[in-house]
Image: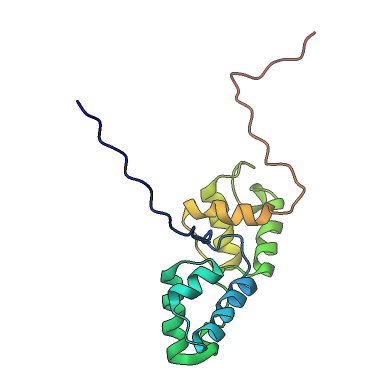
Length: 166
């Protein structure tokens, strides 16, 4: 059997590395990049040209061009922080942390063992904000972020407790 000849690769100019995700980039640098596009649009550059020069996707520059055409350079300015706002303020988080540090017994529980349901109950009683138990972890992580405290101790299992040698 005869083997088919490989077709030669077309010699295309290489595309610039596109930034596929703004993860890790601050809002100011993203805004600066969008604002660099405005004068290019004013000079008549197409969204595809702007995408090549700035190293972003054509979809992004098409969206920017549409916004620029409707509202000028001001339409390319940052709209502020992305995502949902935090449900608990910093002072509320401090109140929750103080309540948790007092221990579960001080909150009316029979033992000092913390569970997600118990922590969620404390958050609701202190702040009035109810969290699903699956999201209580996020609150706990925000409390421990930057804190130099050890993780909570586990309750020893009665069957594996060893007596001291002697």
